[in-house]
Length: 293
Length: 248
Image 1 (cartoon, rainbow over the protein chains, first blue to last red):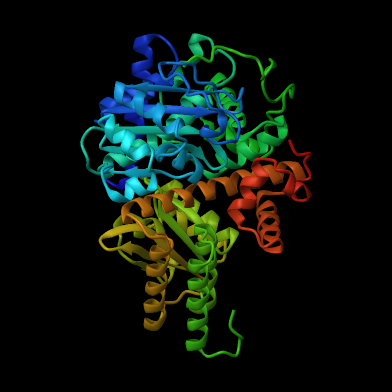
Image 2 (cartoon, each protein chain N blue to C red; image 1 turned 90 degrees about the vertical axis):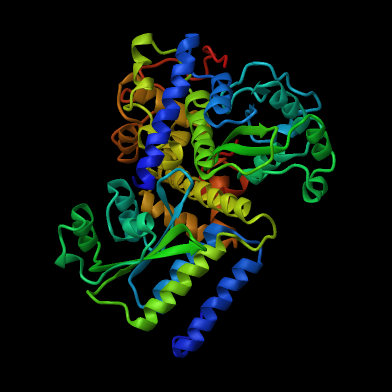
């Protein structure tokens, strides 16, 4: 099998795991589902998703440590409030650590905009890199931490963090899965359409038709999807995260693949400006629908 | 760039000195790979060059191309999962096709568009780090011709340089650095596409014109293309003259 086919197959099976997990709870995919799927599918000891709306780093949000226990995760570009969810007690404690001393793999992944992989926490290098976080994380029983920014180009929404009680690197397959889960978290959790869709229209979320993940996820989406995000930013005067949410909503409500909708936007056959007759059938895009995660 | 009258050796030395400068300076992977495609065109006498990398999600991604036509052709190969460059990426082996028109059935969805863009031959060179294939350097020729042995060797060296460039100039764990640089390249390219969309819409340009504006602005202001792209999508005040939008 080619690497491409493997990537698409993994993306599809991770989507099935996430949506299956969510369906068992009877709701849309949430950060909690992401964390729990990571723990089972990637065989890690714990996982956490920290999100921040706006543009500053999670640690810049103030001194208070967010509640890490299934708290609400707001979609990108929303209120500016930090929220997080963690699966497993270790991930919960580590999540708090990363935000309190304002150092560690999570803040670094956010700031660098790329993954930070720490297969062995108990090294001199780690202790020098994070003199407060390093000893504290070891003290909590963690031996390896891997942090992935929830990022797609200029969309920057938070960090997915995985931890293990045993040292050692992620395998190539686990690394691919982690990158794909991070992409899917942006798409399914953080850039969820602002409006609650009728149940009949949530169907495509479990089929291959409506998401970019049908081709292997946001990181493998065609250039038109990213160009369309930029165009919708201007049409709606919103940030790129909300632009992606608007594109997804249009695709989902019309049961059309996201890449096809994006091609129409780039080809200037479709505008998603609020109130535009070819775009959304109305509604307030800044409404506050059900956003619990 | 070396003088046009410079010898081949002088031009090669000049190109590698230039690439070393980018590595030593405040390194930016997109600037580096974009510059490398320019050197490929100048040194190897090809019409265009492009770079695909493995973004860790099982599908190659275009991160740099010397021309818009080359970018479109690379993206087409990725979408159709066929073509000389795609094959190089998938197999990790060099693929050389001196005259695409001779084998129209080999890559049916690629050959026609390549000819329309004015390219008659295509060559793919793997970017390797040890046993790992991290991407492919692709060359398009305007004439139907084989690469000379000297050009082939130089092409391989440039592909090798492109792979090493992905590790940047930093010290640290090799695997972590490679993963980081590949992800930075991937997200920088995505941000550039998003910024093309912003400019196309705000200024009423085609996406190709939007890219030219973005690139020229970065050159004029001596800023990194990927930084300008992020500022454009983020609607930062310092790129207002480029976007024509009121900043947030």
